[in-house]
Each structure stands twice: as structure tokens, then as C-alpha cells.
Image (cartoon, rainbow, N blue to C red; front, side):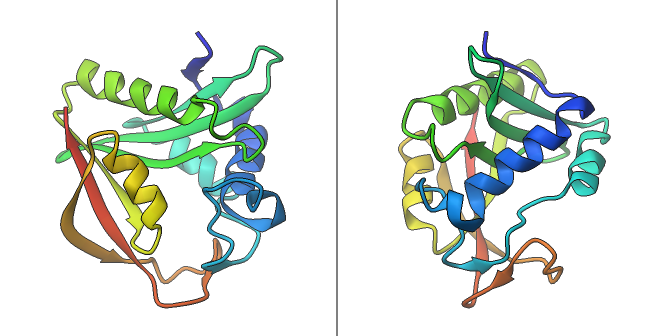
Length: 170
């Protein structure tokens, strides 16, 4: 199966993948870019990703191509109120090939296997096409919003932004 848990050895490749999916010029080749709403080249760096991966309640699932290249990933964290899903990333050059769907399905299996009856996520509220993509897969807007973190290391908002919370009952 091309989806498996990532390890700390994967951090450099994952950082490059995640940043290419969300920021910079390469991200504009795909439809998941945030480059038009957040300035900067980084969505994540190696120390931050390593910290996330060292959380015993978290896992990153990676999608590896037949050539051995990580072309997709998703961060999952077991929390009291369900499974948090974040940074679903697919290489801009490999988008629209079903990799995101496969990662989302793997996340939902992980939730069931770990007795998490709910998956939830934060999506920037002006990302209407991304919200619609999740809605087509059974996720729904909860009506809740959250502010973006004040830390601008991973992007400077180019307009007022907030997160919308989406969820799916598994």
C-alpha cells in the first residue's frame, strides 16, 4: 500500500512537499495554494514538523509513489474531542490523481481504528474551493471560527483571515 506512517527520517522530504503544496511559486501549479492569501515561502519548517511528529498522540501518514517519492501526506492528532486532521498535502504536480482522496480515506480508517468518532479540521474560511472539496466528502462546516495564530513565521496574511471548522462524524 502506498500509504504508511512517516518517520523522522522523512522530515526533509515532508517539509519540501508541504511547503510546495501551500506556498511559493510551485504551489501555484496546483489548486491548494495559499500563496494568494498568505505571503512567505514556508508553511512548516523541520523543527516545527519534528515537534509535531514527536507528539505521542500524533502521526503523519505519507503517500509514497512507486518510485519511492513522498507525494502526499496528512497530519493526524488524537484529541479529547476527536481526531484533528491538518496539513493534507499533495504535490502540486500530482494533484487531481486521487492521492488526496486516498489520504483522507486512510485518515478516516485511522479514526475508526483509534475510536475517534469525529474528525475535525481548520480551513481558512476564504478557501471556498477547498471547503467544497471536503463537503463533497461528507465534512460539514460547524459554524465555528478561530483566528489564525499570531505567529507569522509560516505566512503573513495578505487580507483578513480566519479559520472555519469542519467536521465529519465517523
